[in-house]
Length: 193
Ligand code: IMP
Image (cartoon, rainbow, N blue to C red; front, side, top):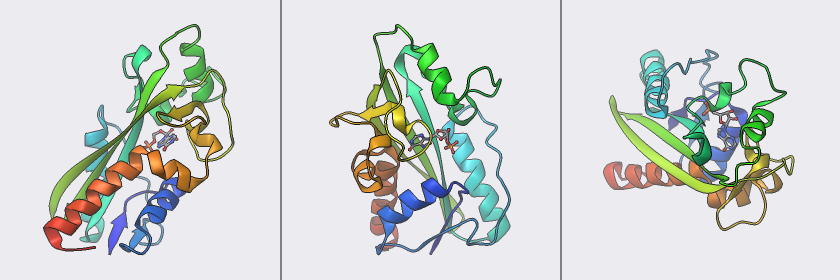
């Protein structure tokens, strides 16, 4: 059993759907940890490591965390690691409003979601990365998913993540790719499946 060091219900749902019947994962809440873990660093890698290390110190149990950012080409990779706090000055209505404003009249709408997973297994850390390339739309579409989902069309799809059911999003998603690597590692290194 692994603790997934996240308080984000959407992420917990997505990861549980991916691991259902393969591996038992419990959320921070289910592990009785109510603490919010800060994400103060300049890279997804450092944030992910801090989260898993904190939970490992608190519980002494195998665990993993993830940090995700939306990296937009025309914005030199912003909002990236700051994706959750992009609109922290509160000048725009939402993170999406700020993103669409910054991309106004920019023909290059290429972007990618990047997820970094930090696993702590038997006291050692391992990292896995998942990337989903796509395009930012001119306007939000759909009410599914969370975060930037309504403005992101993954390569190979015709609709935004916000217009997809979770299972469809999971066919393309950055998080799914990182989780697949995590599973492969657990299988090959520890014989878990
Ligand atoms: P964090 O990994 O919880 O720090 O999330 C960073 C930001 O990216 C938050 O604003 C999330 O809403 C957003 N985000 C993370 N994963 C996804 C996703 O799969 N789709 C859309 N937005 C996401």
